[in-house]
Length: 200
Image: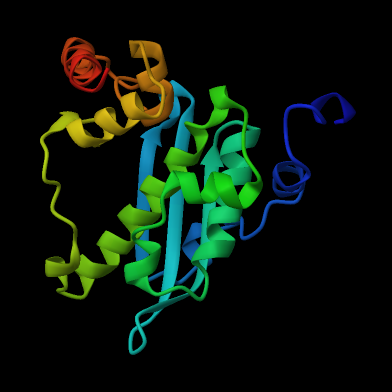
């Protein structure tokens, strides 16, 4: 691991080597919310489950499992620590940037790894809201969905452009758009170019 000293922070390495809150057995974990994103066929899949104090609307525990790289493991491990004890409303708003900041940074080409856990946690919270007839708390996406497989909106592609994406591959890395079936590629490129012209 010494060769990684110049790439990853000690915090990232710690969460990769000693990940927190990993899910061992879904069947034996009595969860209140279940979220999954990605597709194991394309190499990345994330599962997130939560337990909730229904009176206080606070996440009392959470577990996760991923098929992903070291950065995906570290960011999700950190996310799970952040989420426990947090209100559903606050946890719903945790951004990939916050996770990366808490870890002390990631190499630029690994920033996209923080997106998987973020989306899976949001999906678990939304599942909890649906189970408890609280659909009004689910944030309605204000922009259209461009990638149906990964539920990536036009707004998320705009954010990727603002954060440095300048080509299709970089947008894929940062948002996961087009990483499953690829049918949205032309539309992703069209939206990317739209915001490149608008902002730059």
